[in-house]
Image (cartoon, rainbow over all chains, first blue to last red; front, side, top):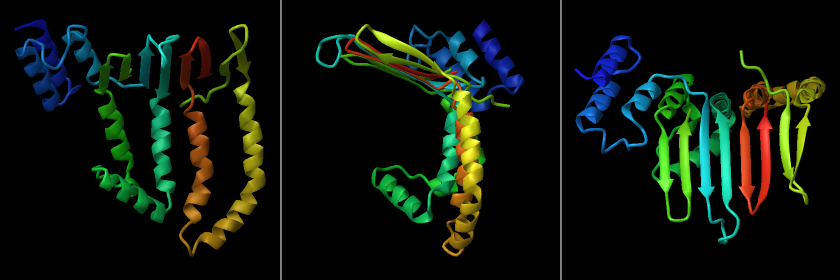
Length: 149
Length: 92
């Protein structure tokens, strides 16, 4: 049994990851770690990422040619997870009528979200899900990277 | 416990490049606390009138939630560099 498989099973045994997460990781290893994970992110990094507590959400934008082909443009934003949590609490202060309007607008755009009834457990689940978030967009004009750390 | 940000590190663009500033953000808290205490009686009276409309809770809770938001800002960083000009906000 490979080290990675053993590590995944140990994490499952220690209840650091769920059965679903272990299945996903094992299938990633079976696929030879090619479809979901690039060479830059070995399975070790993914194993370390699963089950950890995230502190920040990072957004990095790098446009080496700039907006008009002049000087390079860079954006580096670091948002603490505690700030996201505190911000989400503000949704409970949205007046009922305004909440209805927001929900209707979101529904029109295909997002079915009940912002008036967001509970602490929902916020925790959202924050937990953010740990696995990683967006890499490498366009012709620049790179955008969103990830949790 | 989350420690609130105590300093605000600003980097603003200038003719020579940028100006770095370390602002004493911790001074905001006593000022804000004093303002909130002054406003508290008025907010309580307003909340009593707003109970029938069902809007008393947002009015009363906005203070504590705002406080919580301020305390959660430690680590917030925005670093923007465009056309050779750099701007930075960092709550330390």
